[in-house]
Length: 272
Image (cartoon, rainbow, N blue to C red; front, top):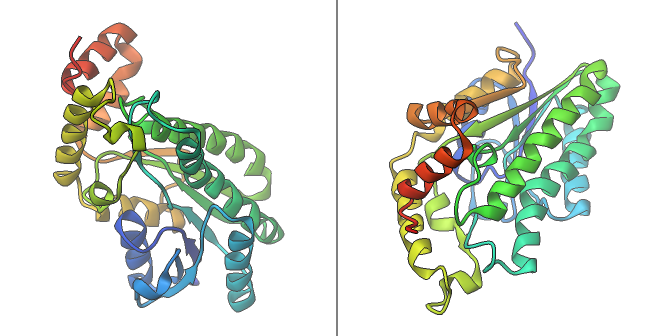
């Protein structure tokens, strides 16, 4: 019988993170989930207080796991922030908040666990990206930018860590039925009726929300992540979600850019 994996899952209070932690726990693994307010999110696994935007907070969470278990076999970088709004309407502090969570948060936790993983000469790092990291979406420019960056970081990291026996895999979900619809932040200027983008932003946002509410269950993404943690999936990247969206991403390589962008503009009712 294989020994249980010690797994740290960021953003485990809801959505994909909670579904992943739940499935890992059900399969007998030692799970540490994280939340900025763990007291509000009771779970049968250990919940740690963690704000991925703080270096000290990341270091403390990793130190706790190592002190209690002596190792970390897998890290799932799932914590994320979704911001909607035109690029022009996005203030610098709002843009920084997205990157601090989605990119630098994953970087901080990864850097914190790597010394222990290298000492064991084994480990798995799963970075939860998005189809928005493969296709730039209107009015989610900063979110797309953060997930595109995570793709590049993951590819580079995989090459650097190969000789240490550490696997890095990126999972890119499509629309998933989670609380993202209710938790999405909107750029302050985007909510002003004076915004030059008010009309198309409202139409695109309505499309995003309808797709997300009808999205695939989070359990499907969680199943893929657990397969990676358990060593049953060893590829560098997995696209998960509705079949139409997976086909769209795959087809992008064969469709002229202008035609592809025309199709997206029509789909999101941007006009012009």
